[in-house]
Length: 164
Image (cartoon, rainbow, N blue to C red; front, side, top):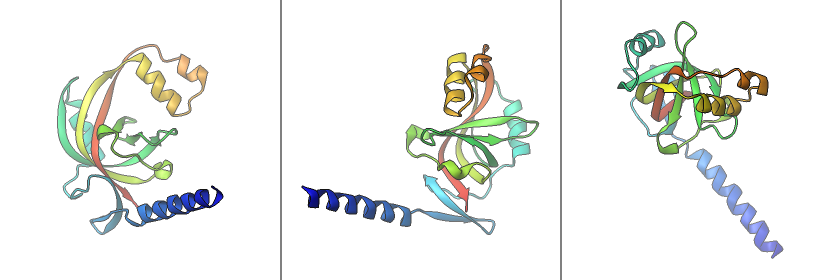
């Protein structure tokens, strides 16, 4: 039994190393990126300035297929299942990943990413805001201050390019 456990650990570690070696990479404008989710051509992205303008012109339930380049400001501390990107004027967009098909590493905060997918505007409920605040590690007193739904800029990404 002991030999079986040792072999099992060996195979798990080997598979993990192979998975890391198989990480896809992409190059956009001379910058190297790691690929998460679906691989896509990163050129033709919009800036945070343009994306902020687009979001401000949208109403709840509107959506737009787009590629956007921005800096990550926060990531889910539980498993990397969402991240926030910096827009203009102190705004952020909440990025979730299509069908939970992939997750981002915890060290993505501060890095530049290009996301590909659907931008949308929604009204986020108080319960959802509290859930995400808890995932982000906010204190109970900060979470208790959340009392009203708010208009948020959302994004469902099917692929992310993260700068190396």
